[in-house]
Image 1 (spheres, one colour):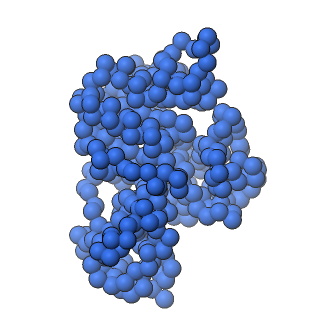
Image 2 (cartoon, rainbow, N blue to C red; image 1 turned 180 degrees about the vertical axis):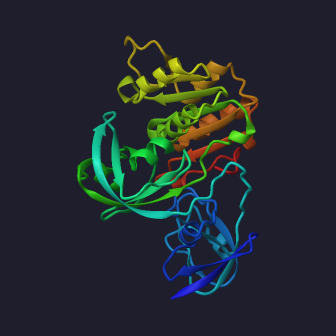
Image 3 (cartoon, rainbow, N blue to C red; image 1 turned 30 degrees about the vertical axis):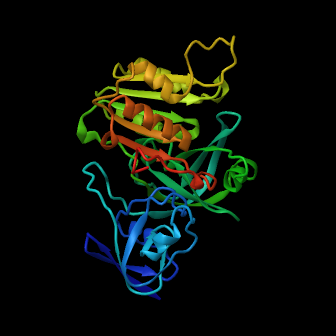
Length: 353
């Protein structure tokens, strides 16, 4: 059984299978709807139901309030159709975006390596090559847990040549998915993967200097984007400000130092927030936003900024960037959102987060 879904203002009508979410149906037919977490936590995929009937599914009550449900709002990532339906979504024109239909992949774990005491690199060999834009992510189906989102850490050219993707997974306290991946997953295991998802990508047509700010395992997307840019000969100024707690957590540090040596237009600024006093660390100390402010003297005007990491880091970086004359139209984010984060209040300074 299936229903007809009309998406405004596009005027597009697609078929949605019973039990299939609105978001999944749209993405699999090459129609982009704004989204982020993919499982009802963040509210990015909120749409207006103009006619018909939907089941809200497992939408988090903080992401979809009761009064919003009463007003006809729903979350596309959770909503399923109960009748032929029309929705209205806010879909921005993005000249640099590639629209790539979501596909399913069979994956074999080819290698697992410890990047830090809390982050593993999981290498998955896919049954076919995945086409994606640097910065996008995949959903991994974790047995007994469900789908979880992880950014692709290697660049598109590498993936095209090897059919292998790298995922950097930080173990989250109490996180069923990341705990399973850290404790149960082993080389040779088979997993189901779908993708690509997301609209975190470089706005190259703007021809402006780029600032990447990352924390924790949020390095995945920026790594893919930066390596892709440099490999394709980008000559615009590119800066990566990357923060971790201590030196043992600072993974891929050698690679970025080498890239900075090879490419005059690329600057790498690592910062440690809790490195023990008296160690031989001679780099910046403090958080990502503090390191960026020190590096640029508090002036960020004229750049495009790409932020990737946990919500508190994103919030602090947005505030610092805006204080330094960079505004919403030039700031793009990918926020790692857990169930606990969903209850936090979103910044009033930045409506798209």
